[in-house]
Image (cartoon, rainbow, N blue to C red; front, side, top):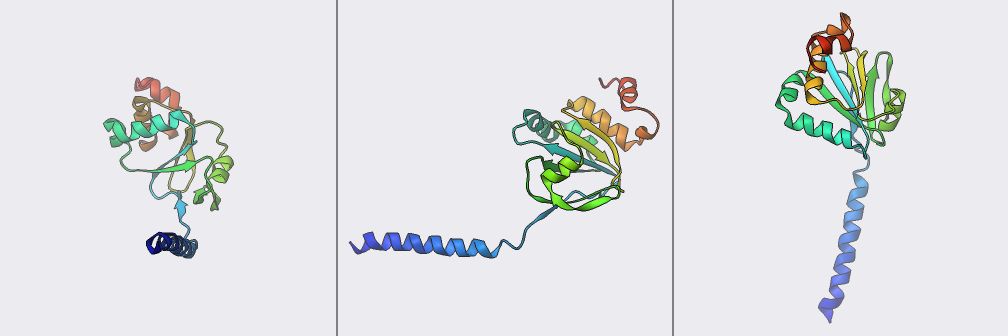
Length: 163
């Protein structure tokens, strides 16, 4: 009978101790940093229920040509519905806000939404929606080779036979 009574007391004590420990860690909130760090930066805004976002994520993890093209590019992600704190800088706009507020500030209205930006935070190119790996590689080349200063993306993609 004593063992039977000791079990609920032990469980209650364990629960009490675990609750008190978790309360002490709330002050160390992580802030996601999407400020530009390299010459070429990519921000992917995703949604929880977006199947195309999941496909893009799989492409990035599995497609070797895409992985090679992403070398030298700082890749960041935001969750449209997210509440995590984010440090950002886009041109003269900078600060700390929640993920969903940054996405709305950028005018995101479809998913995934890709933003390419330079080291100063200037948005070079934005692409709403999913793009296949072959086209994505060409878009990355377009950005990394600074072709956006010379011609339109569609002209570049046709020239390189990426579409």
